[in-house]
Length: 276
Image (cartoon, rainbow, N blue to C red; front, top):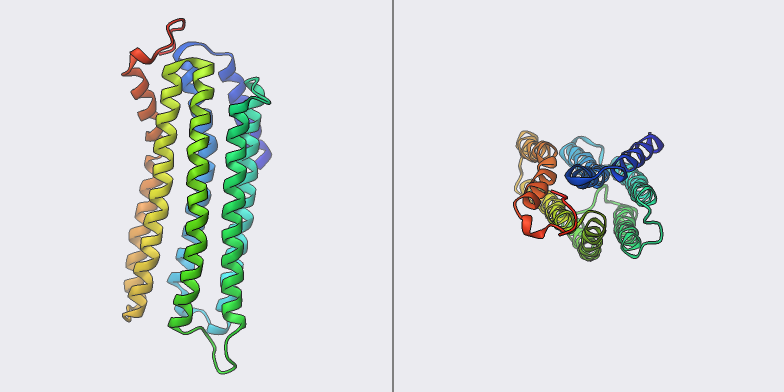
């Protein structure tokens, strides 16, 4: 499946390379957009997995909760590593077809993806080790961590992820600058501006997902501390599930918005080519 997806995107990129005018620039943006969507899907899958776990936490035997967390972490980690590898391979394939192998801006894109992967894996590895240690170091009389122990552990995990997300943000800024430069070189100023706008929206979109999910987790922790029952927890989870559905429904609008922006700014066209 991964190889088929990469080959499909590479074939799409080959088609884009042979096009001219507006269709070529728009199709090029579509190639990058489709590659990035897989990454967004992986994040939403991860959050849904842990949302289900936290919703049903009270029903899990306390002695088995550590194993439940460990399995959820394992699944997400394997999925993210596969997606990051595919994400980089997709872009590499696209750049190869476009004749950009070794290009400085193409290399910057791939480096940014790798940097984000390393930072996020470090955070997830820390989280797995932290949660594992939390359960393994309980007193003999304890079956599950106390609220205070859980909060202390969560605080350390939050700090690790803040560092990782800061690294991810900075890498994505550089990635967006490089993508804009690539599209400008290939299709002119309008295409470069469209790519810049699209990537800016994509990163804001991604960061909003993270903020909403983190807010949801905090609200669930607070609700549990205040004695919320399973129906109340399920109702809160439905709200975030509905928001995830909204994300998936509207992500393609970001690409359309970028193209419309470029169309509305003809002064940004490259004088020697009629791109838009």
